Amino acid sequence: MFVCKFAFQCALSCAAIVQNISLQITAPAELTALMSALRQGEPAPLSGGGKRSHRFEQRVPVQSYLIALAVGELQSRRIGPRSSVWSEPSIVDAAAEEFSQTEEMLQTAEDLCGPYVWGEYDILVMPPSFPYGGMENPCLTFVTPTLLVQQKINIDFFYNLNI
Figure 1 (cartoon, rainbow, N blue to C red):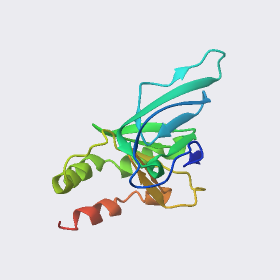
Figure 2: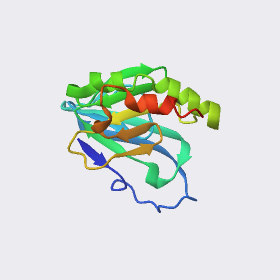
Figure 3: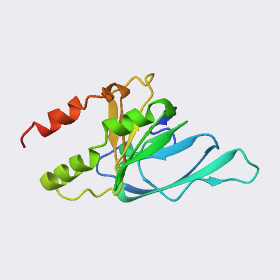
Figure 4: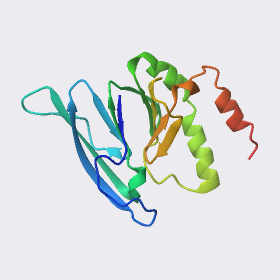
């Protein structure tokens, strides 16, 4: 899996500077591109074969440091009305089970903080070789596979906070 931040854009990294994003990514046909923005339809095959075009749009202005991109052999499972979990095929079902209560968490967060403005909340489970714990980006949160404990202890902790 390829993960990228900053390398594909030239922008001042400053909280005061925000921008909307519209991006088209060309990737080999067997790979899927994801981004911290809303997907615009299904990937389109390009003439000549072997590649697909992935289109994204972020309508909520964001700082440059919140723009992230991942490309890899990814599959998804829908886990709620506005959420999917993405990962390598070997762990996608375990990831879907682990994060199956994402919608309840989003609703609780909205009760506390107001509406979720990004539209989609997807989770990308990184491969074990990814050396970082995770990163929250608009529309797409990158998480470590060590969260896949198959006992939902992370969910139990969340609900026992008694907020």
